[in-house]
Image (cartoon, rainbow, N blue to C red; front, side, top):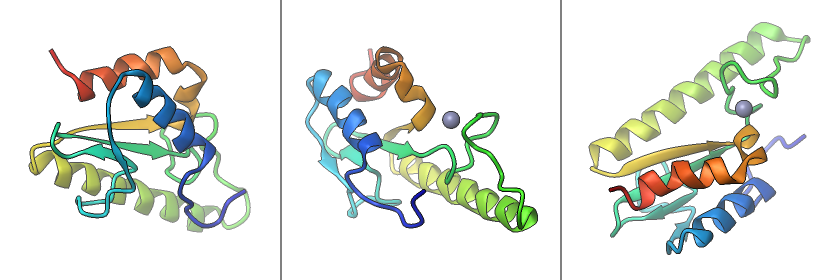
Length: 124
Ligand SMILES: [Zn+2]
């Protein structure tokens, strides 16, 4: 289990592959944008976050388990993570970007993720 956020994880690599498959160009870990999205193309106006279900507290997800020890601490931690994620999305949306979040559990079905990302990358 990872305790620190890393870059270039297998989750991110899987999403990069899908985005590349859509023919889109992108930058990774875009610190020039609010919330430093994992993938983004500012010119085209889109940003993508890649979230591990556990750390980001994916609601209703079977991977988002709450450890039995220090339960209330973990619940507060996950809620804080969720709130931070919501804020990041809101900042980017306000800046006029189309934002998508890809969850770890969704990557079981890359074709669905591809469809979802297509709407953000090249809508219409
Ligand atoms: Zn999930």
